[in-house]
Image (cartoon, rainbow, N blue to C red; front, top):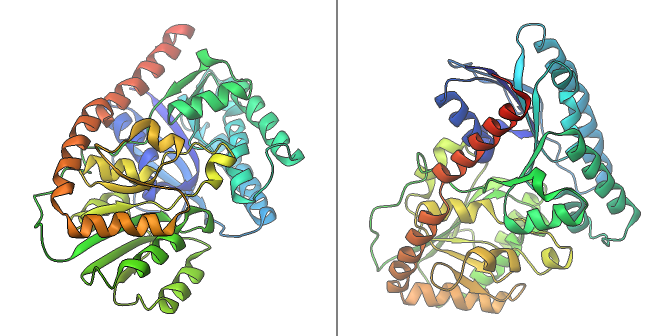
Length: 389
């Protein structure tokens, strides 16, 4: 048994990826301290969660940067304090930003191994979020920040093959990068009971509500086909800086009786919310590819674990893992084509059963037990390389 430190500028209670790691470590007998965002909850056996501050929502760069710097300083202080009570064998730091990995400076000097977990490549994410050229000086600076952060870490984890290619293109050694995908944990996200093939069709989207994520396109597509799909329903779970605009759009498109809204919910509550969902839907646009942003939507992987097919854009990163046997793919940024896909599923429910069969094959190849083994193989490899116990 050893002590592990987990650090993330994210809400631990709603971040499935971080919780998967923590649950795996607890199951293996480790004790875990988590330093993250959000509101504190009671500790449980082997786990302490320190919520350092609340998340900042903004459409501007400066508030985000200042918030991340504040979190970095708070986390550095609190982790250093914790070292007086326990010695960490591993510090696992989640981006964004990458530089938070330097919170692990004192633990590393004390012998801890350090993992930088790249959920999203920061240069491409910021280029997408703020519509900057990949040659912009700020993006070049972020690539440098990423290389320095990765050099400090003993190992780098990322989420898919295309992210690994991007990191290698930024100058990070291939030998240092491992892939642990954001698949749904089958302890939570289990296949549904068989649904009726007639009656209402329920779509779902859960996660961050931001302009770049295309929730507005989803609403416009629903508006286009609602007259031909009168029993269509849309469940929207999440929050973000774009939510006020989304609420206005729901009213403008006369979809108040079609859309049900709720804020973020704990990861453990998501499967219950999704239990009556027929199809997931993703609205990412071509802008992601133009900025080489290869984030594979986590929600799509969680739907897959529950054998819920997803209507998704035919982007390179999505098409790398999904095809017409296990997903419903439309032309990116094409609201009419998205509406066509919704209507096709609404009128031909039998298609869902064929897609679920394809998802079973996907889940055999990409499942949390497989990813969990990769994670522990990486930890054990790091320990062997230093002779640690």
